[in-house]
Image (cartoon, rainbow, N blue to C red; front, side, top):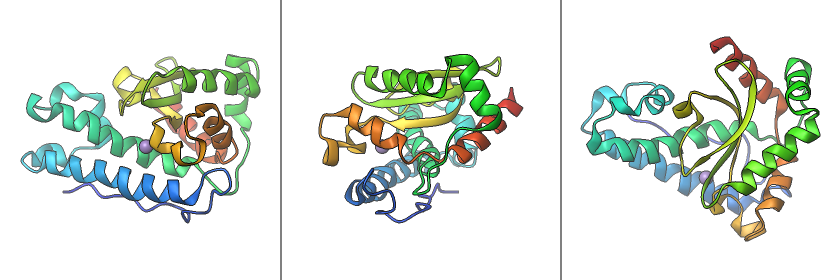
Length: 205
Ligand code: MN3
């Protein structure tokens, strides 16, 4: 059973002016698509792995034969991260509310203070990777980052919000100014979706 590229839940230009259409088209149609095809190529000779839930597989990379472990980690991680990422964005952004807003205030002091930590994690990631808001094993929110296409589940964390800080996510519009990308991202976050992720993650703790 081959993995498939999920369609974007909005048009390429839907997030303008915060995220430009060409970046979206290349990011989804080339970068994400390449992770999917490379993952499928790696799993061609491993049908049992291909049928497993990808997030679960990435949380248990020891189950993957060494010959394809790096491919699953990198391309499988790339597919999982991007499939998680697109629905976090929306042309009709919302704000943190209810139990998630209260948890952010309790853990970070305020939603603004959360954004400061999240931005610091994004800017502090040297090279390529992601910054995350995840739920830890105690059910608490935690800000952290991962390198390359590594997923939070590999560290026992359940992601609820993430930002891609690979240069391909922002270079066309912002060049080397990653801080501008994080600021732009903040304008298109679907916090209702993040709230769903938060509640689902908390149920898993
Ligand atoms: Mn990317």
